[in-house]
Amino acid sequence: MTGGSSRRQPVRHAIAQLHWRLSPWRLVREQPAHVGPRLLIGAPHTSNRDFVLMLAITWDARLPVRWLGKRELFQGPFGGVMHWLGGIPVDRDDPAGLVERVVELVRHDPRAAIVVTPDGTRSSTHWRSGFYRIAYDAGIPVTLGFVDSITGTTGLGPTIRLTGDVPTDMDRIRAFYAGKAGINPERTTEPRLADEAGLAARLAQERLEP
Image (cartoon, rainbow, N blue to C red; front, side, top):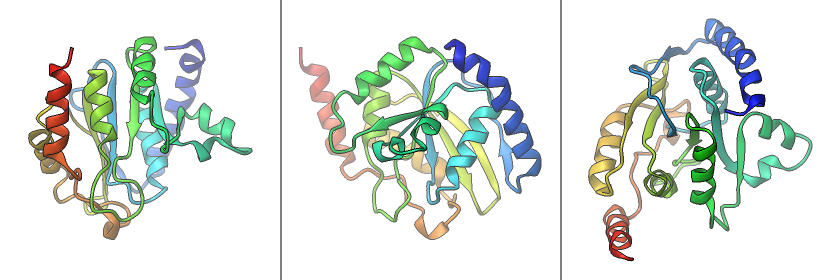
């Protein structure tokens, strides 16, 4: 952890404690707490208010959180704030090198929690597969963060290792999120990739290549 992040952590933790005392949401803390770097899914992601919950969850857990966001968020007068909050700008039209950036981040901070929202905030029929490629290629596990407006709970679920058997891994993820609804329930998307069998085949082929 960098010195700057270390100095900010007590302040962030205190802000998170105040948030959860005032929030109508009930926080579900990670049990047991994962030690080491991980990719953290935030889902169902149906509202920009999820961002506040994500920060409060990770700051409560004292995680050195980093999150992937579209580069437009980092432009203009609030760009510096987004960086301070742990944001990593991503050009979705040119994703080359993203995995390498994540690997480098993990190398420098062995407790890093990189947050991604595979389902986006708009209605969609599928999750984006980038989270799977990043976690699998970087060799880091995936923590299933969640928000559920049905029970009024939010927090961190289990941490799992991806195997390359994409349909089976996604079945485990689907089982965890089954029955959970986002802040805007009508926008909740089932955790399903567009071509799970095809991604598994590509990963298998890449393992065979020298």
